[in-house]
Length: 191
Image 1 (cartoon, one colour):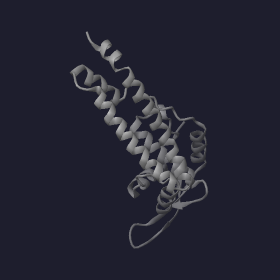
Image 2: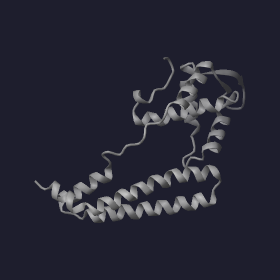
Image 3: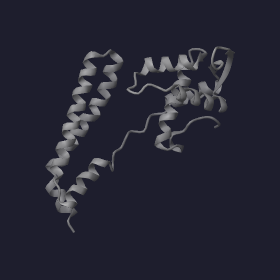
Image 4: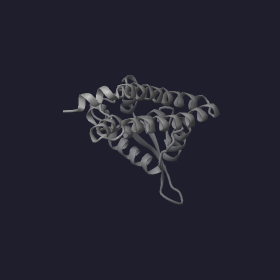
């Protein structure tokens, strides 16, 4: 189907762009908006640690326009470049509906960098325990920052922080389990 973003077709780097594209389409469902208004609404609604850049908004809108998912609904001249209002098309509405109805792939960390560091530490005779302890300390610092943000934040911040905290808690459980099995892993890695 033309213009529909399918996650399995794109690399992980382009998934972020697709999410932004679909998010902008979703924000346009309430009515036509200027790029500036979309950026402001995105930043206010999703409170990302990294706000959306204007260039990203306009390049995404350009791609959506080219793919027939949005259309221009008027141009307003100004001191700088002309301001264009964008509206979602029927194809765009269909795209958002399909995207919202498609479950996200669970993030599986079957071969992550931390595991690689543990194995390399064991193979090189370095302390894998130190690798795990340093990571544990970093996770705990991140959890403290998120807990403070959650305490000071509104419901959106609380939900975002809860999601991140649950992932960090799972990582901490893995760190503890791995620490308890280091001798066994070291034995399996020896030739």
